[in-house]
Length: 219
Figure 1 (cartoon, helix red, strand yellow):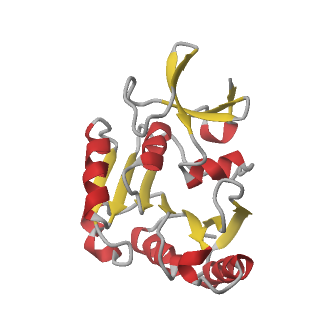
Figure 2 (cartoon, helix red, strand yellow):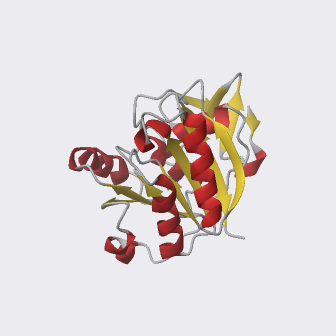
């Protein structure tokens, strides 16, 4: 297997498939395949089930997750992608914010076996309500299907002093009538207006229709 160097070997690739080194051997989160390589257990990372996985699958290389990163994850849902982030950041923390109570119950179950994952029932548009759980983080990752996606992540970046940000922009959540390319350009422009520098921006097709991943940092 080939280790993707930007994650210190925590993400591996073989024949077009992605894997993370499992921080919780023997445990599946969403029915993913488990394999063993060089004496360690790996979890297959399905890009059709994860926008972050899709970003890597389409060639994304701006990936600021490290083994000890403190990550604020907005829109964690049931924890599918967040569990792979926890594999990578096994010596750090992944603060998982989810608004929907039904999905939050599933998220809590995912976190039970992963002490580095902290479930937080909260609204991503109101960072002050969950600031007590994470006073500072290294980065913010966002996957929320609602309007003002750029301002939501930038507000959280400012509230928690994060250096890096990644947002999976869903064009149809901003405006169903505008071309996705226009939405993406407006989102990128707004992130720059908020004082950040964009490191990478790329479409997630064919894995996700009308989605773009934007990676940015504080200058």
